[in-house]
Length: 616
Ligand SMILES: Cc1ncc(C[n+]2csc(CCOP(=O)(O)OP(=O)(O)O)c2C)c(N)n1
Ligand SMILES: [Mg+2]
Image (cartoon, rainbow, N blue to C red; front, side, top):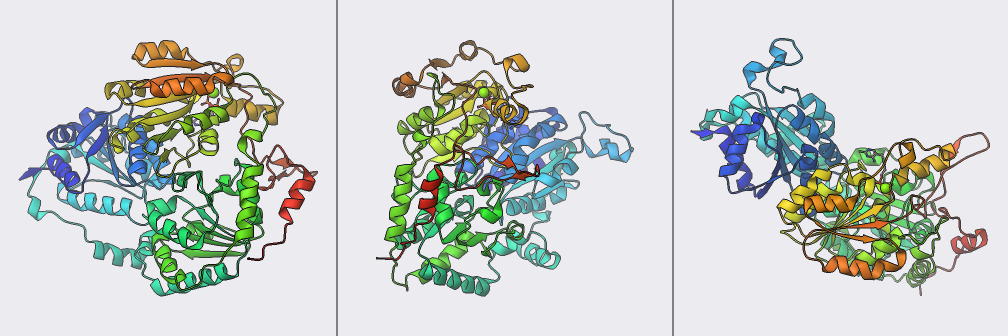
């Protein structure tokens, strides 16, 4: 006989789980006890939101399943933000919560609550998980664990949630008599019911159709004069990075990457040209708008990439988009689109195999054009309207990136000015893991993500870039950082307010600030005193001219450091595609190729009208 909570821990150990993020409670007392007896580490955060965010960062770093545990009622509801973010970002996570014992269920009495801290969590989380189940029978525990992990890790990955009543956790069961999950049965079941299509796609049941599509793409490559790859998180999730690099070496085609795939190629790679989008380096957008064939590998091309204008995205190109999730492809109304529903890994296998047969084609003029654009439009030439002596955020991010090595994890604010700076000004090295939450763009992700990245990387240095406002959400995680002696350099952009909001209010409401600046209700605490209270080293950079010297100093200090740097609340995320109102008052999206501050019209027209693309 074995206690269910013990069985759960043994199962997790068996599938290779080493770390579990948690915050304890009476509703999970048996699980916590068994976890304490297991060979797994348990990492305690100081808020369940931080527990789920740390787990998300951990899974992102490892590109593997993470596990988190919280108690019933508020324990579960507090985890929702991190789980929702994991769902949007396709991050595999197993979330376990405790539930009141079965006899105490409010549903038996038709009341709101009966058990202590009772809350029905499963209906609340079913729209942000791939699978969510209340374990009502102890003999089903193994089946649900196996099924949940299988679903989390296959097809388009994502979080799954199991809610386990206290008396189920404590039940003694005969392990051999337990119901188990059968992959074959599950696959035939989902084929019949046409659910979890992404999992069927991963199984490559339509290999012939995909082979034909791959041949079509090779044909297009032969005809193209200005081909371009856009790589997305899908190539990481499907484990296809090496296959992509192999193909890239064979074809020597320029590459752009979405923010989530930064770090696959080095910033200095000759054929790497940044990330296109609403906020992007000017050259990345000009290049994508000039290409005649764009092959998107594993990106859902969200609105931040198309700048809310699908029709104009890569408007001179045929667009091949490879995605495991058919719905993501069906949503497009992009002209000249060749959608391919396929796991990128399988697709790259086919292309790699067949492309060898064809003679490599040279795209020298096109590559020279891309290189010219990269040189002509460096980020530091983009002038801010309100330039001051205060620290320029892009300068700071660039300088920090020069001091990093490839083993560092880079945790970037999930919102705020630092989100943009960390992705467009930071010069990433190949192999670096860049962690942020894209889909949710939530404040408060950076500190818990530091915790997750630290444990996932087996204690490699972490570099963090965060806004002063966003830092306040989950600030309690400074203590987790102190507790585990995490080696993190925390650069905090202090502008005494919410620049993201006040700038929006400048543009849309003539500078009528509400809830964004000290005079309109939001102020920031003294970070030096906070650093002192937690016992963390502290530094301050007040002027742009001090950046090089002080960043070096921060990087040389041992252990955790809080480095606040003072910037202007007017610092803007440029270049940026800003929309405007047409003469009928309708919002018109900005052109991807001409973000604000606008380029001289003649220069832009000249660049976009170059026609000499014949191969040499
Ligand atoms: C949880 C959450 N609440 C609200 C928002 C809306 N929001 C986006 S950015 C921002 C302000 C960020 O301030 P700060 O971190 O100081 O960065 P700054 O814009 O000043 O660079 C707010 C309130 C959000 N993204 N997430
Ligand atoms: Mg701020």
